[in-house]
Amino acid sequence: TDRSAYREFCKLPVLDGICKSPPEFPELLDYFNRLDAAGRNDPEIAGSLKQEKESHRDSRVRAVFAIAPALGPAFPPKGLKKIAIPAEIVAGIEDDNVPIASSAKYFAALIPGSKLVLLQGGVQHYQFLGSCTAAGRQSFPLFCTDKPGVNRDAIHETTAAMAVTFFDAQLGR
Image 1 (cartoon, rainbow, N blue to C red):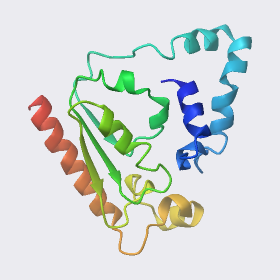
Image 2: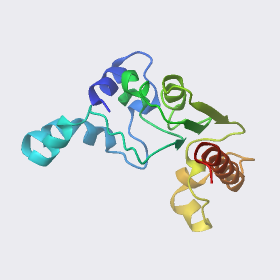
Image 3: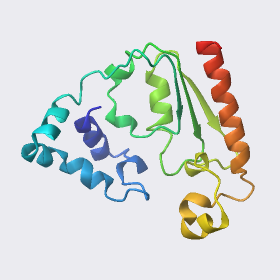
């Protein structure tokens, strides 16, 4: 990752919703921006930040199925173009929390041979979370309330089936 690339993206006139903290972590961007200061006071954080732009390739990972990935601009094209394992990316076409242009589409355009699947029918970001109980819908309406006609359980079934098909094809049984 490259926090400076992300910051530069967020200065552009084309910036989108990925440049604001998500509702579930309202201090994320503040935290993200305070890392440099934290690194000046904490040797462990400083050491980690020095490795920020290095490859973190893990040879045990042989394929990736990414669901509604975020923070595309924090991943420089040069690094994404080096990904040499199969990748499939799925997102909701109406995701207004993690805009697909700067995330799912960004990753798919830069990862060689990747496949992008955009789910239609009102699918947004939080539909990939677990189905909610009545108490969950009352306590966490943002995460639990779907657009009319959206069937979260059907989205889960579809996405799970896609993942199984993908991993079976890429890794075999």
